[in-house]
Image 1 (cartoon, one colour):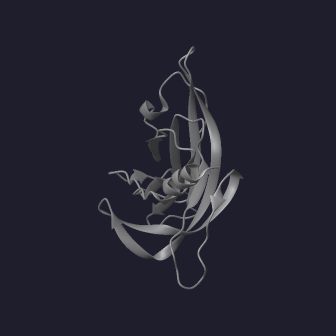
Image 2: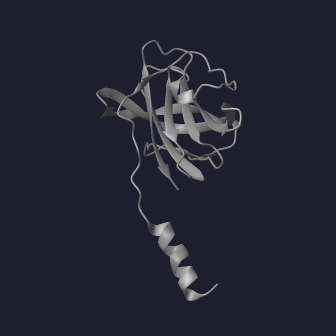
Length: 173
């Protein structure tokens, strides 16, 4: 590898890109969503509890989930959607299912009091999780491989979540 190629690779790793945070928090569901192929664009399906992001060619996506404090056993399912053009068929793929526990300090996001994840536990799929030391309390996130998917869905659920909200900040890696 010549000097110019080394410089280009080094330069691309130092570009800082801000996280993306949706303008709306979603209502958390109490059951995991079904993942079935459909001829309807999944973003138009009206699924409650889901946030949608266009992949825009990202290979990896880092995610920082937030929920309201009164949520019991919060979790987020990350689903990649691919389209079969000839059939106009959208096919879901479970990327990861992540259990969350929350920090005790809150912040306001889109008008709601929200708590960032303190620990993340991968229960299905593939994700790199990062957890906080017990002291000091710190918010954490996870990284998922999104290569090959046109749309990424973050579907929030909890065992008890009547009217509670969630949001996720995402970024490239």
